[in-house]
Image (cartoon, rainbow, N blue to C red; front, side, top):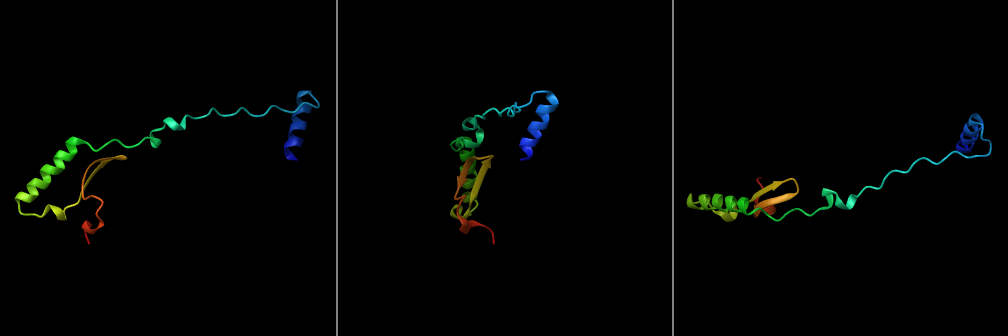
Length: 93
């Protein structure tokens, strides 16, 4: 009701009785499919995986059991390297 009254009032002020005001301009469509949010993360980084393996080898040389170690290296959405990184039993208490 207010819209019709406002439209009529504007038409009267502009001197165009009976003509309704134009609808507002529509927004441009976004190309959301191309957004980085919807892209899959890249594969693990070989350099980061080599670094994790070297670290595990160093721990093994010191007598530390590497099966008890959980390592996770990530940048933004990309998992770069992991060694039992998703194993909840390896979380500190």
